[in-house]
Length: 342
Image 1 (cartoon, rainbow, N blue to C red):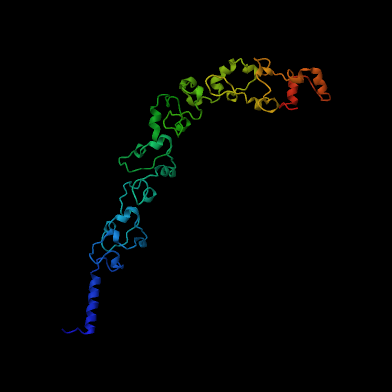
Image 2: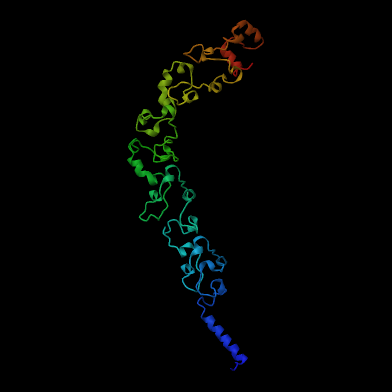
């Protein structure tokens, strides 16, 4: 057997090399080690056995991307660069109604969305109260349930029909404002839930009232929140004490709560409005109002000189010897001792 001359062998090897290069199905620009994907037993590629570091392309194969076949994204064996935007491979089922940044809502693990409340808050409409239990299609009502066009953020954008159809009370005839939060609390789970009328809480004695008990006309938004707008007659007719004669303020909340019935009243505002009896020298020194207010029908009258040593006019005159303008009268006592101190 004759051996080929060395130069002929070299030419044959070079020719074979050129031939093999021309047969590379990945193209001449694809230059990585074949063993990164293939093995000596077969050209078949096992996804979990690929050694090629895909992150070197700027697109790491994470989540569901780590299990897809190469050809699911690369349409030919040239493995030309594929754009990294999601819409390059994934159809935009939302039809651009939420933009093209899929990663804002989805991740590479799943298409499921768990941050719906946070996403709405980012868009300026937090899902609060009854809105937390709604399905997307309850508000985003389109023929395609995956198209979520941006909605307005005013109540009337969704609840105009509710406003027009409400009859108890009739919002249209009453001339109610279309700003629902004027009467309805956003955190409530229902239109007439626990937080309904939150601007004027219907607690205790006000709880369970019919609207017409306070709103005598259809101008529901014209009623004053001041107590006397409903309770003026109670104020005028009260005799124990006589509120009119005593000059007691008409701000009922200074002494009364919304508990059924007016009693017990809390007169602690007495300290701020008139004279400290729950603090200072008089704290704990009295048991009933009539100790100072001798006329129960007129609490504007009071006595300072009918207790302690003040009942002896002569002694009090000696005590105040040298005090200009001294008078033995209760009003005079208050003028010089407005807080009861010496």
